Length: 381
Ligand SMILES: Cc1cc2nc3c(=O)[nH]c(=O)nc-3n(C[C@H](O)[C@H](O)[C@H](O)COP(=O)(O)OP(=O)(O)OC[C@H]3O[C@@H](n4cnc5c(N)ncnc54)[C@H](O)[C@@H]3O)c2cc1C
Image 1 (cartoon, protein in one colour):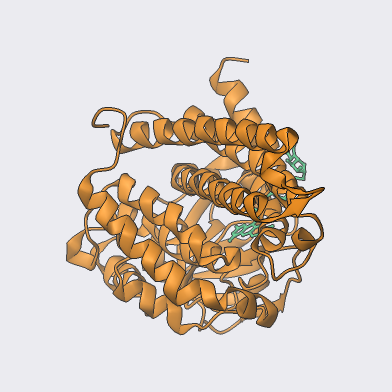
Image 2 (cartoon, rainbow, N blue to C red; image 1 turned 120 degrees about the vertical axis):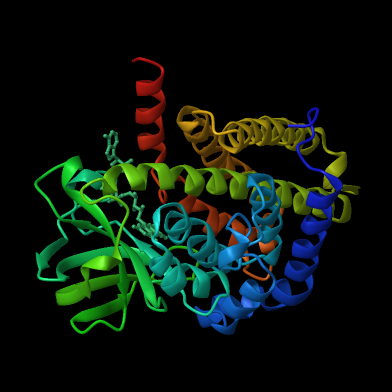
């Protein structure tokens, strides 16, 4: 980190491109896409063309070969699209499902899956969770059994973001015995016979992202699509979770910042009892408390990013950042909505949708309770 500000002029120029795009091209459609419970598939191509899916990936595969701070700038600005489902779908594709291919893939796997995903031509999902295994990743039961040069997949996955649209899955499968040691990752094309997408789950929030239940019935996939070391999938997944959780923390902080900015603007405009809400000390102090806590969350997140960028151990700090920022976002959303009064309860107001959508942040990508488990273990408890 250069001084205390991690962002150079180049980062800020990139940030402005993302912000401009989100505010001008995406935000005007945010409500319509929520109402339709989907956004245009073509946006994956647009994001690909803008280079948003290849920020850290090698230029050889179409990426920009940049560092984590560009990802932070991207994720921070993405909240300004005002559609959390869209932001989630894009981050799942670019920052959650494909980095592990860049990390561990063979050249053939990178050519087949990574490069077209970076271009936004093939949509990716990460499929780990199952009806009977969410937090307990080591308990997953979907199997991939060797048969000649293929593996044959059987089982089910649930809550899979982008699952209905995905062209391929980065799929967690059991290739060995029970527990941590028996898991592997498999790149799974979704046009494989025997693969079924079940109903799209009707969620509390993020309505524009598709979240589905998937079934695998004797799906035959070339064994060369196994990703990374066989039976080491659990460890590959745990490493991959670090980027996912950092990005979740970044999104939570940026989302809170936006909610408070909106609340401050509303508090200047709205009057009650002959004066703006902003002149009421109770609201000034509440917002001051939140601004302070958000700043603390931001720097905890930046500290975690700094460690990750320098290749230092960062599991504890990333878990702390996700826990703190995602829990705090619930309180900030509640208060910012309350400040808007009745306007906060109608979806035409951004805070109403943000309050609804922020709820998932303490659940997806590892719950707050699991973050506490990781932190307490790291602290020697
Ligand atoms: C909108 C959405 C999108 C998602 N997208 C994806 C995706 O793209 N890919 C994917 O694979 N998964 C996805 N998930 C799944 C998500 O990762 C899981 O929901 C999450 O990991 C929690 O698992 P679970 O729902 O099975 O809860 P459970 O593991 O059943 O936990 C239930 C409750 O018990 C608590 N708990 C569990 N274990 C402990 C413990 N040891 N100590 C204390 N408390 C504990 C949990 O914190 C939670 O409060 C998504 C989920 C949602 C809601």
